[in-house]
Length: 495
Ligand code: NAD
Image (tube, rainbow, N blue to C red; front, side, top):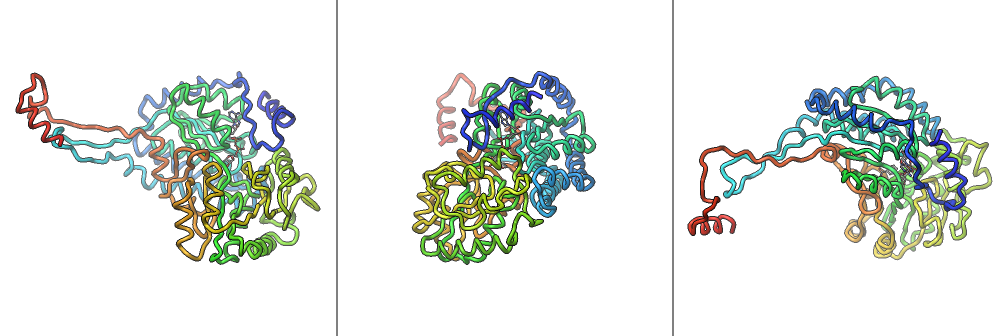
């Protein structure tokens, strides 16, 4: 109840800017949630050592995989209810991606658990040195609403693969998915080691008051700061998977038709509510109008004359976000609408529809270009070549993703060398998320730490350094009293 009142206050609080995506107001911890009891129970499980063997870890991963197989219909329906998500997008965005990750983790986890031998220098010889991964203990995973299943269960899977106990906190803004998760997860994993806690700010605040061995947070940069502050009190390590404005640069040598189709796909998937969606496009001035015409065409190809009727187009998560997005479009300096826009038919029948929208030349300092859009509005701005794009990107916080479309390598290499971003995808959008061996994460304001595949296992492990020495020979050289000979030898060895 307290959570709901918190959200309501946030919606009506005039002190908060209307356009701010996330309210970072803190609240008292939910008194009804026994966060400490949950942590203690999981600590007791961890202490038994049951989570350490490879067999237990694989069992949890295979259990979660079965959850996706047997619970598929429930999850597809929950995604439809929360986000109007088309079935195919439910697979691409949440179910299929998570299944791939679970298979990969289950296949490799035993090998990753093995110690890695390293060389022993002469002064420490004889001996055997190795890096031994060990689980951290009890982890907390906090998820956002936009890919509400994948972004909760994949980090939880990484925590389990690394032999930890884990608490998962789904987003209250995707209530159908949250309810499905709380129903399904206990059926497929060890209930002594895994707990799902539903709730919003008050519940999360209660959880954040506790001491954890790792906090894995996916969400906005603003709430990331709240999490980092709470973690700092206990010196708890964090992984922060945050947001920001991911730019997309289109060079004049690019195949504009292909670029436009791929940008439209990456931008309007899940109605633009994707952390790595291209937030805005920077295009070489000479081809700007051609690209804009292609973008307009490709929106039409994808969603027809009336995207509100398209089965391939999702909805905005709630009225508050719809209002925020309309506010961005209505704000001064939001550019000229090329396709879509708030009206006519911008908001249809209260079903939280916002048309796929392309705008040209918004004010670079205006609201549309100052905050993460996180919705189906694509601004296009002309720049003067790769250097113009580099300067534009570098004048803003480091983004989570950067896209570059080009027929030539040189402009791409220049943009990559001249900018910093969590990840990069060349001549496509979003797909750098797919290879399980590419760590996924941000840099600077877009986050800290990465996961997927071994990167996730590493994130939830401590890499313990172990040197094993025999008791013989026991050379006295290093021990006092020091001799001239020892001095000579040691200085030679440490040269
Ligand atoms: P959010 O930061 O509002 O919420 C994320 C989680 O934090 C939710 O579970 C929520 O209950 C909790 N929370 C919210 N306010 C809190 C507070 N004041 N104190 C404690 N907990 C709080 O994010 P969101 O709106 O759910 O998701 C959108 C954001 O997430 C965007 O910025 C997007 O870019 C980012 N995101 C990043 C990734 C990534 O992988 N880097 C993926 C998806 C989304």
